[in-house]
Length: 372
Ligand SMILES: Cc1ncc(COP(=O)(O)O)c(C=O)c1O
Image (cartoon, rainbow, N blue to C red):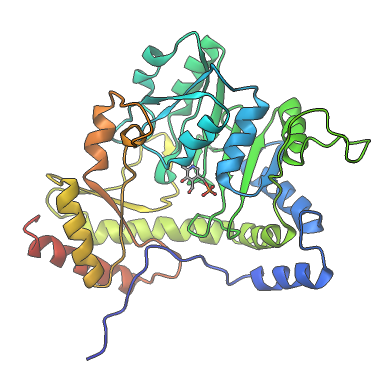
């Protein structure tokens, strides 16, 4: 008997000029952070986001750290962020010495709930990091207006949301700065990689300097202050240039996948897929499924069963405040939502038949486990 086809959670799509550009970079000998692809990728990404500046870095975690450090955030400061995110949002903040303060989420967008934000602002608060989780933009209109009233920086964590938008304006252009990840599973990938976007000239200059050990621009190997090596390589940027050429195709295929999954699973009792607010353009970075009555234990069993059936899944992030090294937070929505959600395979190469097959196996597993 032949094994059923296995569906991984994600796979990059590298079928355009990716190999050609990387080969060109290798052949040219420009394999570190100096090289034409780095400059081109930054320019192309800035125009993709509709911002003046894009500063490439090694990954999305250091992108956050670089931006926060350049904003002058450090010991004694507080930074507000949603409790539901990948841990990098919190860890990059802690790396500056600042304290993360966790805000609850809106159960429809899965992003920071602006109605819970103001109560968390203290004299120590310096910044807010809205996270555009799973491709859905946070409510930037409400968040920006609160931030403005209190004189706070707004740093968008757009690691999972390249191309998502509000009113035609793309994420990365909606706060003081935005950060992106190009990890292999993202909407656009460079293997590992990151970017900071901003319209703020001073911030952009500061980040470019800090990214390269704060080296003086007119005196080589002279450093007035502490800096970092957060540079992206020309090889990664070569991949990035090729991915950006295909941005429309890569982004629209995720939207099509969502429609197919919605068709396959949307009618199941007690099962809900990604929701999108009427003001938001969602890029559906990953397919989200929430199942009524799920507990962490039951979800583990369901995911194990799906693995046997050849479908890879992953659980929603845990609320960051649950991690043993962090303080507990009063975020009931994040806690409730986190335990009932999981992500299904989401990648460009999935065909209509593949999605139908995954939906069938998912439905069978739900029935077998007595969840549906
Ligand atoms: C919301 C969020 N922020 C930050 C990051 C960090 O990006 P990287 O893995 O490139 O360091 C990720 C990564 O996946 C993420 O999902």
